[in-house]
Image (cartoon, rainbow, N blue to C red; front, top):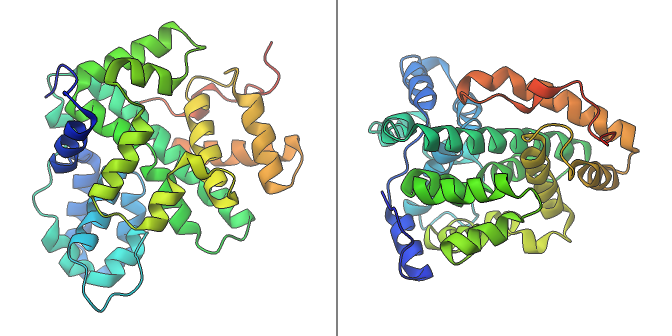
Length: 299
C-alpha cells in the first residue's frame, strides 16, 4: 500500500489502473450462493447483488470492455446488460478468484471503516438516481444508476491502495466543515479525485457515455445533473440531516423533478428508508439512522 503520494499524476493513473479490484465479502458470499443455484437465476438476480458493490460493478463492465467482440456496435453501460451479453455461466466462470476488501484492509480498521462509508454512500446515490430517473421517465434508468454507483470509484480505490492518504483527507475535512473536498484532495494528492477518476475511466476504456455521466463538469445536462444531485445528497446526508448543504440539495432535487420542496423531501425519505434495508452490507449506519429529522429546518 502507498503511504506517500506518487511523483506525478500520470504515475497515479498508471498505478491505480493496474491494481487489483477487491470487492466486499458480502458480494463474494452472494455470488457463491447464486452460483449454487445457477439454473434458476437470471442476469437481473445477479445485477441486484452487484448494485450494492461499485467495485464488482466496475469489474464486470471492465471485463466486458476487455472482451468486446468486433460485432458489438453499441456500448454496454449496465451490469444487467453486460451479463446478458456473455451469459450467467460465463459470468460465474470469469469471476471465480475474487478477493475481499475486508481481508485486504484487515490491518487497517480505520481505512476499512472509511471505505465502507463511501460504499454505503454510493449505494444510496444509486437508489436516489434510480427513483428520480423513473419519475423523469429517463430513457435508460439503469445506465444512470451505474453512473451514480461508480461516481466515487477513485475515492474508493484511494482508501484501498493508500489508506493513510485517504485518512489524511478525511481528517482535514472533518476538522474544517467549510473545506471543499476537491481542495483537501488537491492539498494531499496534488489533484482532485474527479480528475483521477476520469483518467482512470479512460485508461479502463469505460464507455464514453458512462464517463460523461460521471463527469460533474457536464452538470448542466439533466441526466448528469441527476447523478450529481444524487451523489451530493448521499454525501451530505451521511453527515446527518442537519448538514448545512442539504437545503440546497433539496432545492436542486425539486427543480430537477419539477415538484415542490415537501414532495422532494418525501421522495428522498422514501428512498432513504429503502436503502436502510441494506445496512448489513456496509458495517456503517445508513442515512436513515438519523431520520425522522427535518433536513431543511436546521438552525
